[in-house]
Amino acid sequence: MKRIGILTAGGDCPGLNAVIRVVTKAAHQGGMEVIGIEDGYLGLVEGRMKCLTPDDVSGILTQGGTILGACNKTNPAAHRVKMEGQWVVRDMRDEIVARCADAGIEAMVVIGGDGTMAGAALLIERGLNVVGVPKTIDNDLWSTDVTFGYDTAMTTAAEALDKVHTTASSHHRIMVVELMGRYAGWLTLGAGVASGADVILIPEIPFRLEAVAEKCVFRSRHGRRFTVIAVGEGAAPAGGKVIVDHVDESSAEPIRLGGVGRYVADAVEKLTGIESRAMVLGHVQRGGIPTPQDRLLATSFGHHAFELLSTGWLNRIVVQRNGVIDSVPIREVAGRIRTVPLDHHLIRAARGIGTSFGE
Image (tube, rainbow, N blue to C red):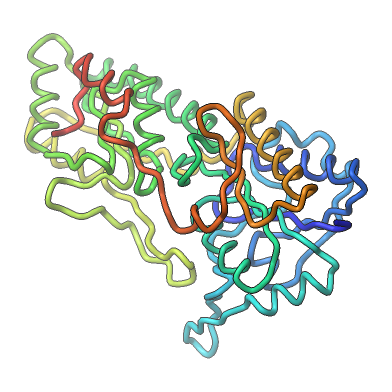
């Protein structure tokens, strides 16, 4: 193999540059050229490519974001474009495969989450060779125990909850912090347990507002005149639905979650009479310098991706299971998410010290 491509699709997260760096340097050591695709699948659709050299990736290990840019709105098989005021959906896969062939790209390293891997599976159907690298702060990709980006995001979220703890204590308030994670509770669970949140609400466990209020009142009556609540954006009340902030018609994944933090804060204040505040941590969870753990994981994943390319073991995604770096077919991962098991050890530990999950 003489020339490979690499792209970062979906939302950005810390550690992407570490993968770009190791793949580019290892490929050049092995006599391969590397073509960087700008802005994920959108760059493939629009033909925006550039050569990457070891000099281009020198010093980016500790940088957040991605030097290639990212886009979370493009599906290669259903690219949405606005024509004469109407959204038109076009299947761009054959054009993408032909463009890669014209550029001499023999295989593509695709870095992303479940939506990105679903797109990769669609391109594989049309003959593009792909090796996937799993990233997402949500930690929800099927078949891998962990994704890079998660550790940094969890650290950021936990530190924010730590800071909220002191102001909640000072003003004797209920503080509700809404975290990312979509339909999986890994980020909220990890940050909530790490920061000692009093209530943790995750998508896997429908909550009752009455149970949340009871926990807040109990704490107030027993000398703890404040409560910190960590809530995942995909959490929903029992018998209810997730709260949608808006719908983005230009995106391949149009549903944008958001608003559950405000919903919980307003409802609990009415039920308890205790002043409540809500904050949305938002995209700060995606940013910043990757933690050493994420740098190590991203580097390990990226190098294993290069090894798969070198040996011709294609159309697979790198995973880590039981502490071992391995790979599985991309088709096993595409379009699937990994949620928190209800018997997870962190849930048991949190319950064991009195943390409420709103049940």
